[in-house]
Length: 115
Image 1 (cartoon, rainbow, N blue to C red):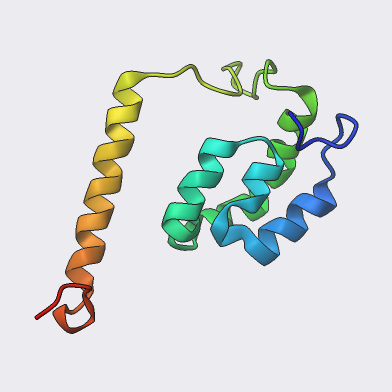
Image 2: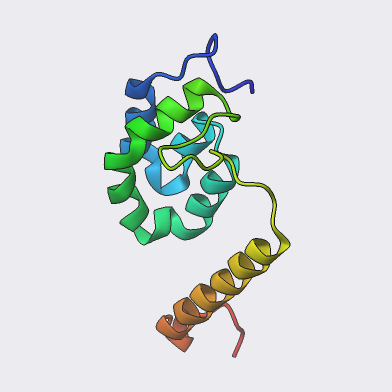
């Protein structure tokens, strides 16, 4: 992972990225959690709720990143879950539902469709 500096992720940099560009998921990319960073980028940090959660969870994320991807979390589960087609389909469904609700909020006058 080329995001690590000599194998050590610094919590100060992670918090700086979280507080300045957290809605774009830069802190997750720094931690090597690229999929989570992409989700944050596409949803603006779970519409701000994920950023609030990450303020408290970031020390655990940094600890896991410094131990490596083969480490286990507090519950004994793999830190990085294996790919699951079911999980992938659920994420697509969730994204489509969120997109549908967002499209319902935008008034037709602001949509990109031509009259």
